Image (tube, rainbow, N blue to C red; front, side, top):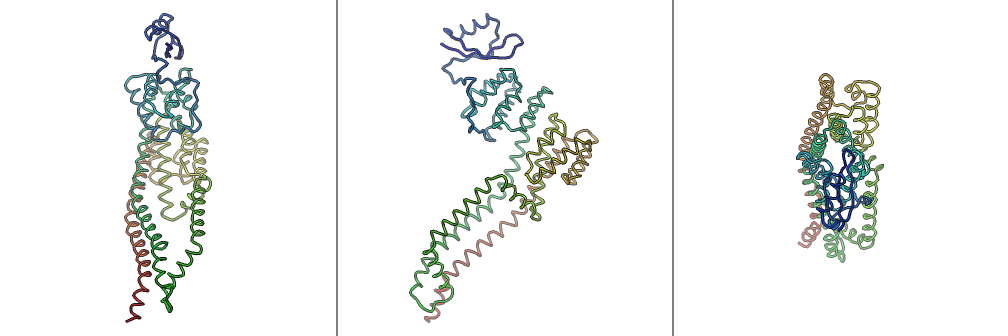
Length: 400
């Protein structure tokens, strides 16, 4: 029987050996006699992934799966397992593309590479932010704490996204249902009402409008449907292109109160990312260079200007204020951080303050928008219904 054994010899790098033996104990004994220390062993019939298996290009790990992996790795490291032992344990319980991803990371570690280098080989799965955190932790030998900071960053970001989604969900559903009712009345009910009046003369204007609408649908209904589908497809395609999506976001950033709150939301996310990297041991200029990736394209030139000002020796608060990338709260906290030497913590506090501010503002806005949306939908449906029944009332009055 063939066995795969993870071994280490003296102070050398861990490696994986494949050998034939009558039993697992026999394989372990033979390697121990050669001076190897056995880390783990498995028969080939088990779910072992060979070291030369590459991750498929389309094997993208989603954010939730990544967070679960980091949580499990953090728990195993906190329990006292070595990094290789923790990865071996996770590989046994992994599913889908993560089996290959963990196997590849494990292979690079056994070849003597650092964890950050191993993650860089799987850059489609591990974000640059996580890799930078791990690289900083390798200098301070505090990987569990770095993973804790990253998990806290992800949890807080997910919490903010969930707050925004949950608050905006009801108005969106309301508009969807109201729009569906309007389309049903206009495309199905109204043409059938119009049939009643087609053979009549001296119709009121509302009945004439219904008949004209019915004739338009009969003559060009397919063309209208096709045109609507083409427009919808074009919009979705345009939003899928980063350049056009950035233009749309820049347009939104120029719309009054919405622009202010959206800008604060992006600044808060930027502050949190910088603060996490600085607390993890990364210098502030390098943290800025990496954190600029979380900014929308329209705000990145300002983020780059802050980084350049910092590299030229400007104080953090002045560098941020120079290009209007610091809110009044963030400015005061930055100055406090400069005095105490704790800029990372102050930026994180600024992020928390503004995230709460955005959530409260959004909640207030939705409390106003919800009744407005309901009123608009109610008026729209009511107008369509009145337009359909008004000719009947007018004809009844004429007959009387």
